[in-house]
Image (cartoon, rainbow, N blue to C red):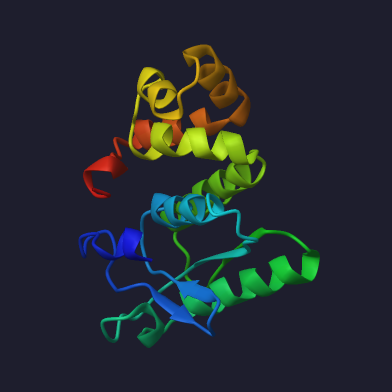
Length: 178
């Protein structure tokens, strides 16, 4: 949670909150924020389940769990559907979801699916490459392995899809995540 708490209000309009001891509520209009947090948590090899909800929101107070609106109901529905279907991630469009928000939900859903299909090694190598924009040479030095190993592992991971989505939008998470 600390990884995303320092983000500007424009990106994260309310503080993420832990609810029921094992769930995180996060409010953002940026698809990559929940994907980044999901990736960070997967590095700890935790069993995760994600509910991505879209819709209108009413920011009432400082913390996400003190806000209200269809987005929360759709996220809860998505999480319930993921559990019911035995899936790790589910996407549910809430009432009043714009075309833009639907696209943002799809990007988050696709990216989380890619992360879930990676091996632990692929996730570990993909993290600095995607989120910190490290070069393959830098990653190979950090991991004390050959550049060819890093390159092959990353190409098989499909992490390039997430990185390309970020690049196409001109989004540079590393500027916000320091």
